[in-house]
Length: 220
Image 1 (cartoon, one colour):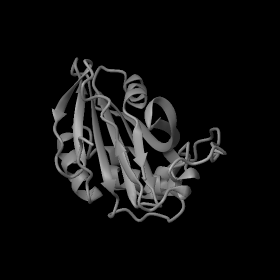
Image 2 (image 1 turned 90 degrees about the vertical axis):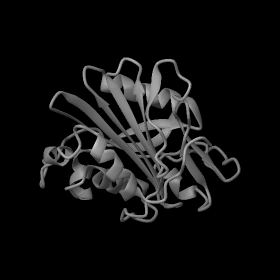
Image 3 (image 1 turned 120 degrees about the horizontal axis):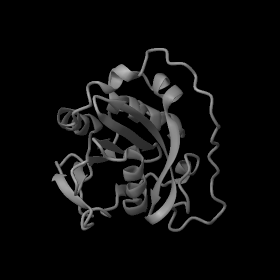
Image 4 (image 1 turned 90 degrees about the horizontal axis):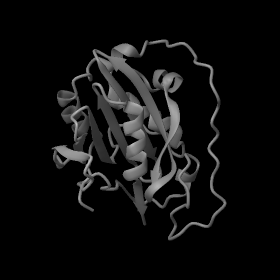
């Protein structure tokens, strides 16, 4: 492991909010009583494949319940030596760091660690992932986030394997396109998130590249 796992989510968020130009305005885009957005319902489907060393072969929200409490969860370091990326802010010691595209159009702020400041719902990784999003955004509730967030997939164990269910908010503000993607793992009390912020870049394409190159790695 080449990045530090943080112990507190709040500390990482404080660092992130100070440096992210569009944060502080994010919560303004989430109304207190947002409208219900019609769309397809995604039902997590646990894998029927046998677990390896107690770690499920896939990581849907439902699969999260099968994780041992001792499982270690972290981002991979797939961008560290990628020619298209560079370090913008090194590991801060609290589980957070920022990488940026070499053309300076987009940044990706990563965090991993124990989500001790989030009111998680034991056994419900989806609801708890929305709670992590609400904590990152600030000034809103988990229920409001749930009405606006969508389910996406992050990479799992190796690049090119989008098998980790996660929750995502996207938006635009003051010339910035952004997405915030989070996953809580209630069996371990851990969480991860990534904030992609682009000015002139394609935020969706950058997120797809992160899924391809920077998987979530879970070990016993």
